[in-house]
Image (cartoon, rainbow, N blue to C red; front, side, top):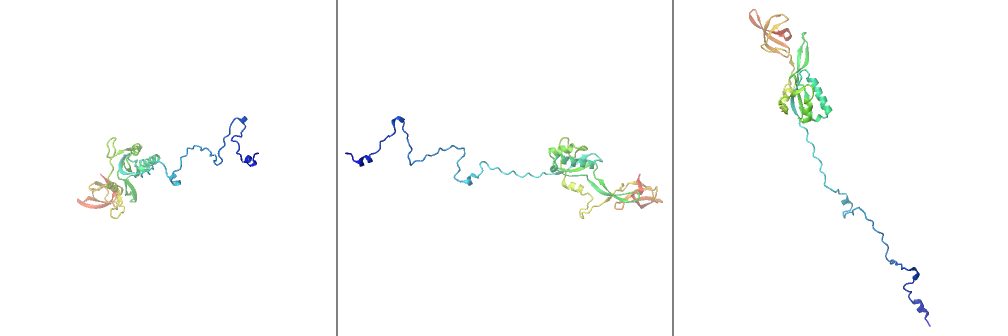
Length: 252
């Protein structure tokens, strides 16, 4: 007689799957979990340095460009048409602005001096007299564009001190300052106004009005401050100095 306990403790058969199914299903162990597949990515793994290392730029460090050196300007003398100095200067300034070359140009000057002229009635008037008719002083950098702009301006001849097709030589700064400050006292800084008297010592003149009208003589000295001349006139066979207004005489 079989023991009931033996029948209960007997192990189950190894394969209780019906043979009619024709296959065996393998099951994963209970203590192992399914691991999802890892997708490939183009992203490179972060370095051990963390966020700080990721912020460092990759590649060569660009150096900041050096500051451009200032353009060096020099003074030159420019030949222009006589009696058109002011209009040519204005044309040059206008062309420089239109071309956008202001950094290559400085002052453009018509050298003048203040003089006093006397009318026939004896009234004074202050006028500006050109020191060098037909010339301009121009401060510029002698680059190709600047040189071409100046030479192509109507009324402009050429630079002094240059041969055909060659660049001119700049002027001496001391000489330019002497021209610009003509008539200014070096010690006091005050402008000394000259009188426009068209005579010089030694000139032969004739008195055209006044007490000594039609007398002839020679200019001995000139008082530019007051516009007078001292003329040596022969009176009764004797040479006599006479002071006259400069508009009272005329050249012989």
